Image (cartoon, rainbow, N blue to C red; front, side):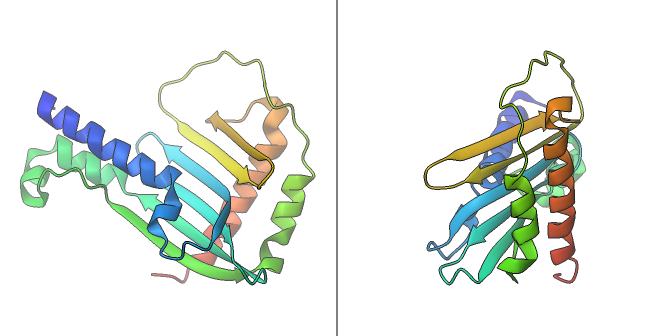
Length: 179
């Protein structure tokens, strides 16, 4: 990849990550409150963020699934023919789907998360190259929390990892019928 293409790729990647980390920018209704965001960022696959917003009526939640088609964008920069046909541009292939669900459907996941107690810091100096970055952030007015790990959570956070996997599976099922 030429230096120009590398710089363009860097801009594209920064733009995609900005939207995955700030998915509320893709939502028209600015009266929603983002209170939970989960993510899964594999090295060579689509990056996904699931977001839960509280709505003003408090009886429903708006859930959003934001996907960056990283492999397709990477191919455009690594394959000259794909780049020529699709154009070399720095706009990421981001898709966003939203759905409203009743609060009661998601309450068990929130209650489970609120019942988990883990140390905020762990002593793990391991490193890695390829894998998956998982994480979530929980936002409340007085206190926010964010946890993130590479591939597998440290043993001290195993309950968080189990919760995240169950929660993202539930959220994925909510989007099965949405095209």
